[in-house]
Image (cartoon, rainbow, N blue to C red; front, side):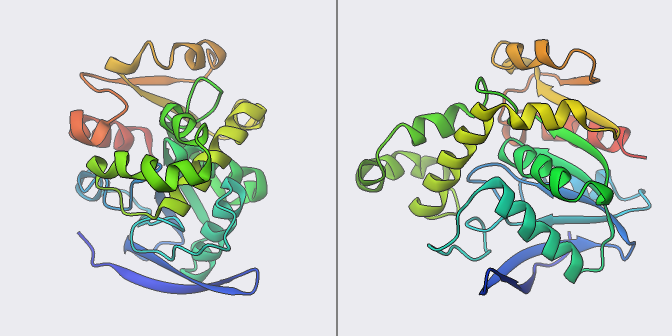
Length: 247
């Protein structure tokens, strides 16, 4: 696995530090976008599964998570996260991206495609947030008042060992619920004129059933014996399937 690196970017006049790991020097990269509360090291199996690909491999921590900056003056909207990703790609001289978006990362990937469609080669949505039926944990968080979440709600998440702050996870969840409820993410996914796939866990078939009904024409791949927690249930099969879908 590559060593961790850091790069400084300028966003709306503020300096932000982004933590990332990269392998390869190709101008196109397979980019992994993590979910809420997760980080770039979710799936160490990806590095070996994708080793034979002609693309570089990039895993990074979104703003507010992992070892990247966690500012209180950042919006934590999916659009602003997508703009940060674009700035990271520019810093690394990456011109094209195969996007692999897990959960919240899927929403960021769709906003990235909306803003920078010419840079997207293909998109693999790993139970990425698309509709109001998704973002279950985010909705639980967002239903709380900020003061309530700060006092007690965040403590209830400590078992997950998330690398984030109460502020970053709360405002990410609030924005994620707004964007899934808007219908814009699903519209962007359906309208994307690039190779695209939806990957879901067998144990979560009921949970994503409404989403599956709305994307019937899009290729879907089921990961056996897995819930939404792929990295706990079946990370090996997930990473192998991702590798099979990327040229």
